[in-house]
Image (tube, rainbow, N blue to C red; front, side, top):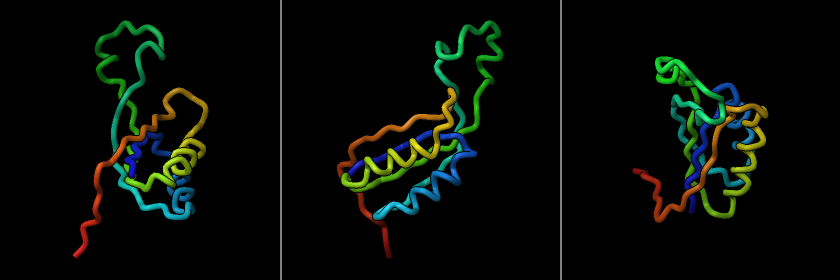
Length: 105
């Protein structure tokens, strides 16, 4: 089992959500609104310290815990649907999950 986290542009969320729902065995996801910025070296030199501390961009974080056999399909789906080809499209990472359990009554 793996946890997939992705940071994407908010405007790409509907396309990502719709595509993920079509994947067989998709387990669902949690969404959080987040803010962030790219590595300074990717954007060029900055001279105004105030600008550097306030230039955060709104993003959305997806969190998905999924069986190993569908992780690659989920990552590929997010990549295809979230990409615009511009800096700031986001980041996806996958980590192992030792144990996960649905909490049901």
